[in-house]
Length: 69
Image (cartoon, rainbow, N blue to C red; front, side, top):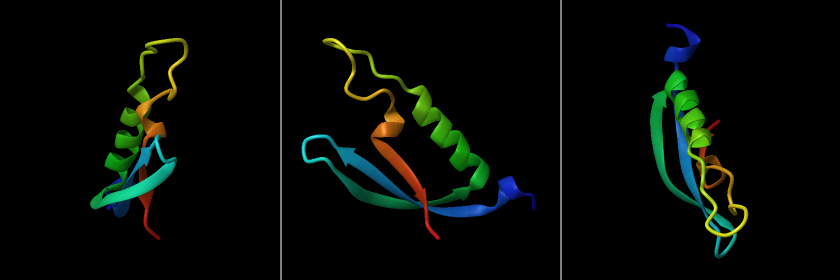
């Protein structure tokens, strides 16, 4: 089994812009390689500004996938 095949436990958190807090919404177990792909995908989803600059650059600023130790 190579490093990408190792299963990792992650905590999924979302950010609430109204209250400025992170909320733990779920847990997941997935291969480490898939975790890196998901993180990259979150960075690829860009926000379009409605007025001026967008408040958040990409979706990774609102969704966290944190590995449990």
